[in-house]
Length: 315
Ligand SMILES: [Zn+2]
Image (cartoon, rainbow, N blue to C red; front, side, top):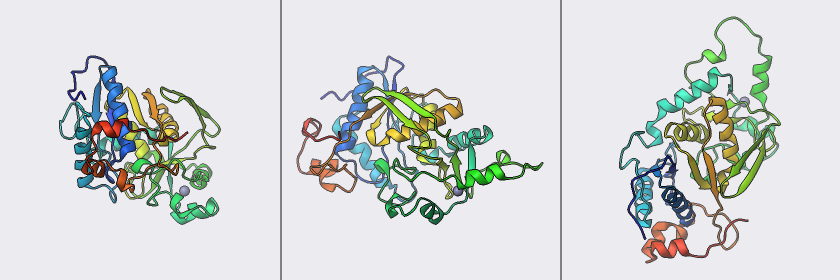
């Protein structure tokens, strides 16, 4: 298995973006391996970025383990927390100024509004959702990412309407606010607008804003930028040309395309990998300990065993 990373000779820039909220499993291995192969085939560069924004669930031990497990698999990156590079730091928790700048840019352009709804307000507005589908609830994070979740209930627009009805008084306006502290900030989606993109693996994709997802959070009340905002700001800032990730993030891609447009950035190309499922057809989660790279490695399996195993994938 080739393990040397040749010097990039093309403009292709891919990335690996693990969330250190648990040990990586065989599904991650497949997706990250694909990202590595795509970068190699394009004679491009691969960047490692640690997505550790979730203050409650991110652990240094998992970040270390992710780098080690991916190295063990034979994946090599050119830039990353362990290697440095022109876009350092490669750890999201140390990149706050970049996310704040993106938040400000969206705010000045009129795309954001503060949301004062509590989790309870949201729950009563959408009927009686499952506890686990509420934003911020543990256990539903897509691939260990922060909200918004691909399946989160559509935001009913309560605070958007309040903003629209507010009298236009002279004086400071929302866009004069300097910091996001104290509120959830939501992105105003263009209701009814289709968002289409051609996925390099799964083909043409189509989502409709307001039907498939609603106004989503870009900055959380607890001071943390959302996954969507951080991901777009970083992929743009780091010059990523193709995003390879799991198909559980397809709807996030539609949201992110709206962010790229609103920020005035061009989007990268997309390549979503089908998800590995267990024998019951369920997606793998970080709690599937038996399928973690760690435990498979301890049981004596080799990278080749793991990458060549016949595994069921989601239709
Ligand atoms: Zn609200």
